[in-house]
Image (cartoon, rainbow, N blue to C red; front, side, top):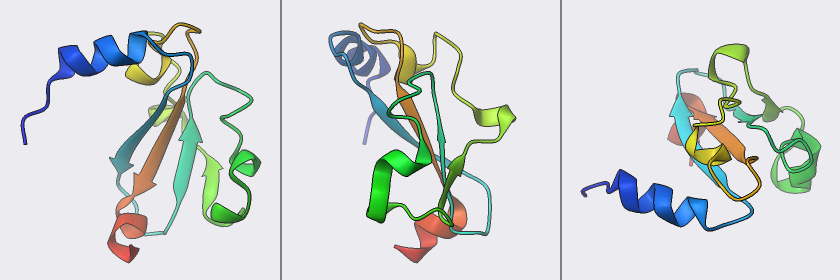
Length: 92
């Protein structure tokens, strides 16, 4: 599969809400939540699908708050970045 970054960024720039999904290291089954959208970017926003034990605020080194990050490169300048650990990805 070839990734067309320019086309993807163009599509994101036409929207008001973006959720980007990334992978990160970690043996625990955790979905880290980051980005600049503070209302959608709360772990409790995802309810039963994302229990408190599995959904946490993202560590500072992968927080997704840089304005140029694709999750924030939309019409509002705010998006959500989900970081799925290797352990979580292996479990599904």
